[in-house]
Length: 311
Image (cartoon, rainbow, N blue to C red; front, side, top):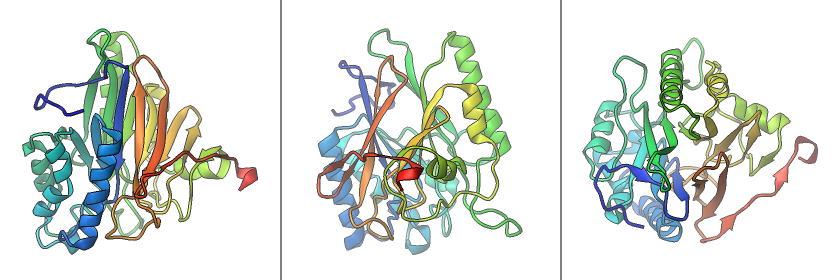
């Protein structure tokens, strides 16, 4: 399906579905052979899935390896623009690591014909904290919300490791969620996207039932700033999608919220032998989400359930 109206609201289809393709950790650099292989993979997945939205969940470029990071981002998202598919982005720890700022990269998103991301409030931490609403096909009213948050890059040296979603961002999320549900008189199911996984991803693997693979440590922040607790209390977010750990692609339900990794997409970095993407399908008037992984062979993977006792 080609999106015809520039910057118009996203909508559920007539069959009641809304499909998102999550590309993560593309690590685009200079447009070399490995980058072109990543581009071909993304093109093939878009043709196969015909999504309503593309979400790039961080490290879309590896700025330390880029001659021109701004040109690299344009190249990495070029297939979305070419095919006329709306897209949004959150930033990871490598996107603005060298030679470019998050603000400069966001300008590419806002200036693109099919880019939907926004810089977000200037008064809170991070760039790209914003919400996209998906309109229902049945009653022309908001039927889903998509939260995008900047999970930062690196922690202060005294703490070490990676960044986290800051308290002022969490306050913004709470206000967005509560204001919307209060004004509309109902909870609208929502998804959340950011790059660095929450600490709860580790707890899910250790104690919960999951589908998928874990082949490296959960590289979450050392600090738990309470984002999961805020989502649990606000009750609208039904699933979270992160990237960052290239050899993890598992997901499952943790106390009522589904936590998922994407499948690393880019060949210009380490990852699974078969790169790919996570596919996410929402259904109008449903508080459930269907998801699977499509890899570079064209195959779709539906993992069996795993429990801690069966690992």
